[in-house]
Image 1: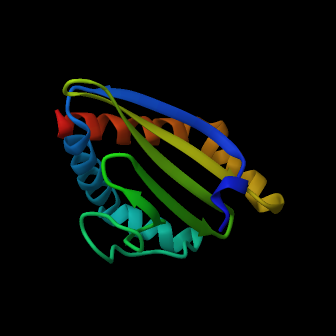
Image 2: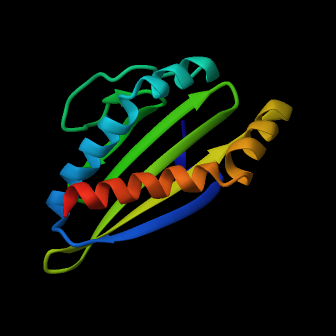
Length: 149
């Protein structure tokens, strides 16, 4: 998948009162915990995700998976690139970490996705247009912030 060619969806950010190394660790733990819930695996199966289980190295590295996502690239303390695909969409979730001061970091989550065909357009309407995607990403960022601080 060529992530750079996927259409931009949105970006959300949070400031974390912790060093980037602590935020990096918190990001990996939060993603593993969030996507290890039974509902995540079930949802991944229903929509036909390519990756449906957690596998690969921990801490997260290229090739690690959890339901709905595969790690395409991991630069500890800087960037984590997740990609995924299912019947209705090809997508990427890219986390960027920036040090903004001593013991302070900014964590940004950039979403990119394409939704081909009529079923993809309907899926986009249900997930993106309803605000469900925004709530999910903000919840992830808040979880990382709480875990890291």
